[in-house]
Image 1 (cartoon, rainbow, N blue to C red):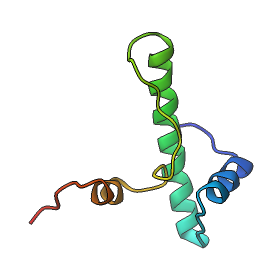
Image 2 (image 1 turned 45 degrees about the horizontal axis):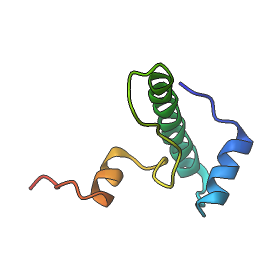
Image 3 (image 1 turned 180 degrees about the vertical axis):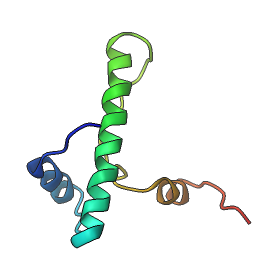
Image 4 (image 1 turned 45 degrees about the vertical axis):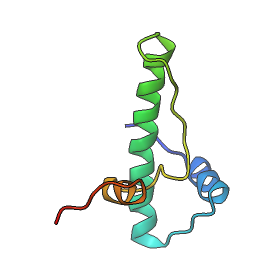
Amino acid sequence: MSQVTDAEWSEYKTKFEKSYDGEEDQMRRAIFAKSKAKIEEHNKKYDNGEVTWKMGINHLADLTEEEFGSRCGARQPQ
């Protein structure tokens, strides 16, 4: 998994106006680290000509899959 420095995590939260306390901060940082690793892996494929578009960090990088789906219109099971 991609390492996230304290400075990088702080910069992300500042840039996207995020604020977490205690355990939630740790959880969100871990999610962010997974997102960062996924983005880096995808962008290596871009650099090798395997895909045609690049990914980047955005305001959604610290959301769980459920939160992301909810914000992006995924249907919830009934």
